[in-house]
Length: 204
Image 1 (tube, helix red, strand yellow):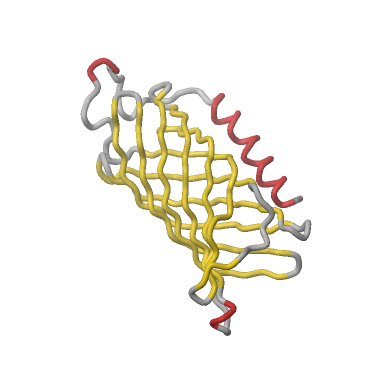
Image 2 (cartoon, rainbow, N blue to C red):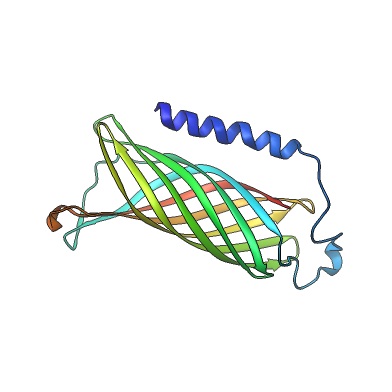
């Protein structure tokens, strides 16, 4: 649990400092929320998103069949940092880093850390914003004295409320796919996870 505790501590400490930061120049200008422009974002805008929440194991496959996993329900913990850059008002590229931990039936803990690139789009309705994203990258799995280094895929969707010109708050839901390939095909495992997090986003 030590690694998970450190991850949550870092994320928890970072959020209040960001919230307390002084607002700089608004890259989108002053927004008249009663007459909001169609394109609220422009090229060069950046967003930093901090998320904390829970993660749930779902379906695991092995050799084309659904298998029972050894992760103890119902949930584990997760957190992430995401940095996005707007190439055009409705398209972003960026990167993400995060981690999760899940207890097992044996009383141990599975840890996963991931680092990847992300592409996304966003829809705006007044003060509400709905980003969608696809991510891919590398993931590190650790359980007891064993480890695994492989790929991951992630699809995410968020609903944010723009509280100020710089800050928005909301919920994010993601689907994760973690394949584990071995030298023996029958031992390959394809894990699927779903997370639900509370997110704070800063526009700069």
